[in-house]
Length: 299
Length: 170
Ligand SMILES: Nc1ncnc2c1ncn2[C@@H]1O[C@H](COP(=O)(O)OP(=O)(O)O)[C@@H](O)[C@H]1O
Ligand SMILES: [Mg+2]
Image 1 (cartoon, each protein chain N blue to C red):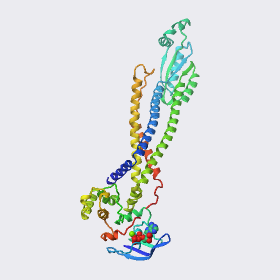
Image 2 (image 1 turned 90 degrees about the horizontal axis):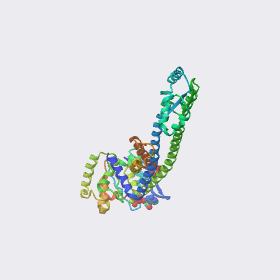
Image 3 (image 1 turned 60 degrees about the horizontal axis):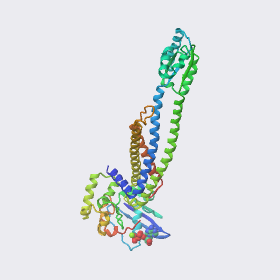
Image 4 (image 1 turned 30 degrees about the horizontal axis):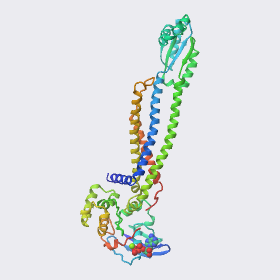
């Protein structure tokens, strides 16, 4: 405890020694993590959105026209036996018509002009979660199409796939931007610590003369880097939270509302902690980088 | 126990120590005297391994200092109390903190450190200056601060001040 207090004191002393560069180092770290955090927020929110859309993913299994009740039951039994089908509901021709009328009242005449009800009966199928990838859905649709009594299988997951692609793109961009910015802040932290190292050469020499080990002499500088990272992370979290609340307020304003409700959420605690850890990692890497080989073997 | 066997030390091919051999036993009290430039500081530097001899061996507690690994040197130094000619005080630390530093380095308990440091400062009459910075001390006071910071197992403890003063900037 005694030692830890000493190390902290020394680290704080270092920070006071180079105020300007310290502000710069912490600022870059905060900026880096904030940029990364913006991507992360977008990514996480999009991912939950895609997840909930996938929950609503339904496939329509259209039945052949004029299929007798016996045939409908055959298809139903077949679908129920299918492991990929989580649940299904029968939509009769009549129900399909009422639903259509309700959804598109203006097209009322169009259907009337066609005379008899042209809409086929169908099963609305929800797929089991583990079979919701686009490949799996496609394979399932191909297979189901061949079932006797089935006319067509329809599912629309193109735009979900697009979202998934966007997610992947975001991941790549976040990684690239994160790496570049992290490298920048590591460099700046390393240089800041190099400055304090140079300024306090004589003090370290005295420490060595009274029998301080290399670790003891260098520990305050590692702590200094760690502090940069921690403070930077805390700052970036505050920035992100502020920005997030502001955006949310703007979006919630009537008249600016998007067509659908977007339940945006901030980082869960775990992710916030991870961001802090990332800051710690950046800070420690910076300080270790400046210490590697520095005064090696010096007595 | 300190032993030197045929020790030579050169600076720029000029010898500072020539074929020096002697032995100091446990508990012995020794003064080393010599004109300025005679090599007193050089000898002390060899003893706490700030320098290595060019020829011969220096042994402390039967360990050849030239053979110590880098991690063993701090241990050697913790067993010694050296007062430097230029005091070697940390300017930003108080007198108390400066005196406590060797004990902190050795990982001593905070309570024990406080007790011992207070005792030592008292002994050299610096108790009233404990929270001052070294720069505000007179030369004599500055010298007494590290004197009090020398702790246990110091083979040079008790040596007169002029001997300690023989140390030069390393
Ligand atoms: N680092 C050094 N580089 C070159 N010469 C040195 C160095 N240290 C000491 N000397 C020389 O070694 C000799 C002994 O010096 P020193 O041990 O400091 O003497 P003393 O402490 O007895 O006055 C002197 O001639 C001095 O100039
Ligand atoms: Mg001298």
